[in-house]
Length: 130
Image 1 (cartoon, rainbow, N blue to C red):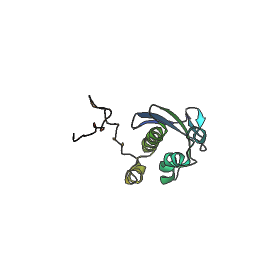
Image 2 (cartoon, helix red, strand yellow):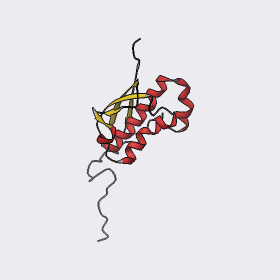
Image 3 (cartoon, rainbow, N blue to C red):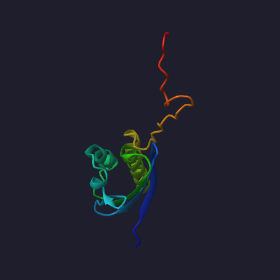
Image 4 (cartoon, one colour):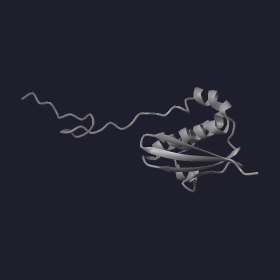
């Protein structure tokens, strides 16, 4: 029997993560590196593993993630979002658990664009009275 793979895409800020789930024993690779080696901050690793913990599937799957764009924090958020969507493709019964924890919601906050004639998005020139 062929081993099934469940693929999904997650996004956050400028980062895009392509996540592939395959039944296995809990191997987690991000850009061909172990998740702890790629995301050096423990908080980011915890964020990524939250959908797996919420669905009690921490050691059920081998996970391969290709992530690009943005910074580490955005990439971690994108990976979390993609992982939740891939789990949903694996089993639709997990939807209430994932939805209640807001893992299926795409965080739409983006960087505000720089305005013309100004130094940044919100920066204004200093006001002088005289």
